[in-house]
View 1 (spheres, rainbow, N blue to C red):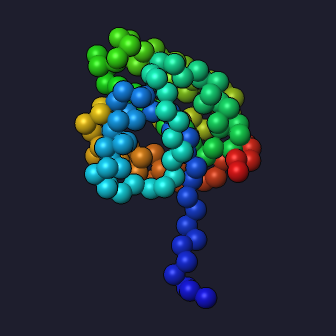
View 2: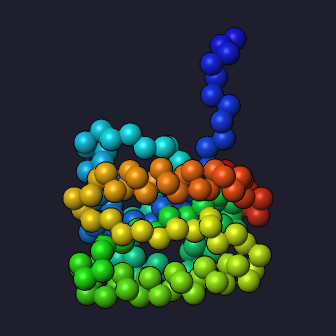
Length: 143
């Protein structure tokens, strides 16, 4: 047997990406062959403002180790102010998670535009390391 088998735990991070900016940035990272951890599971949404906080809570409750929400930069939303709605909901959700006894550091929000492949890669790496430091989520069983 090989002794070089990687036994390091890789967190499962559900990632909600805005179709117009963040998803395009992730796509550019892929076509540019930039390397990032295989920890994310991408869900493409029309706008970060359309993400119901219940989706994030459900992901954590079902066993996701972390959640990353990424949208357009402020002022660049294709739906005018959807990303600003998302930012406000996100701030309230972080407090709600803390009250519910869930470590709010499992949930992250970032801005990534379509031309920022490096920013997307950096965000995924940072979130992966922060979630890895928290350890596995023991709330549910994601298969």
